[in-house]
Image (cartoon, rainbow, N blue to C red; front, side):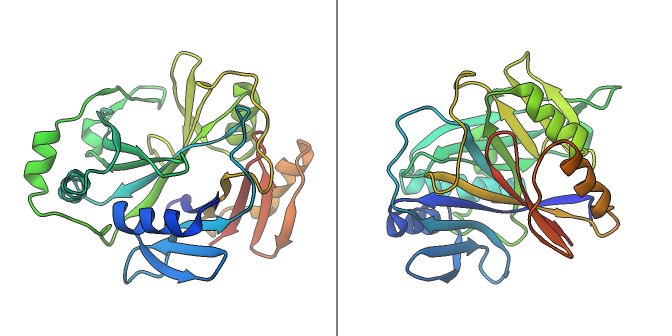
Length: 280
């Protein structure tokens, strides 16, 4: 196992049924378990939750807030990306972008409540622009949609086995606080700095597991429990990770450890977003 892997992202939603239908019928996830207030979705035949929807009664906030910019589902192959793209075109899904980032090819859309979603595949690492200092530079070019569709010659209405949560991209207000938290406390590497507008963090030589941007501005209200949008996300840590040292660094820096057990704990990041840390 790699040092870390991202797990499920939980979203607080207003219309649970509408959101469930979207993530099933448009995105292609499968309902693993559900009740009247919660729906867990993942890949059919694989008991691994990728997106969890939780019904709340709150209204959409009127003020700009820190929170989710997008969740990013990583497909195993370019062929799968082409099959998903063919499906999205056939159902006239509301695509808002299709980009070549140098290290990946990505599709972008939003769910009915405005949560951003990226569906992407990674290119071979030999094609990545890795600098001597370890940073991995991305670009934003038009995706070769014809080439992607040619590989995905069959429509794929369901996310295939091997799909993972590739990264999470957050809207933040304070870059420096986020860098101290994700790099200095959690141990992620800063893999790209986009001119003071976005910073990416990763482990294991990846391009990014955590994205941050300030495109909504710096005067954002902090995310808090129960608000529509991101509820929490999970990070799984490889067993050799010194969990006690990780907790000590977090507490020493003034963050509270919540819901602690022998192999897990929660912490709230500088954006008010709950992270569930699990020793796997």
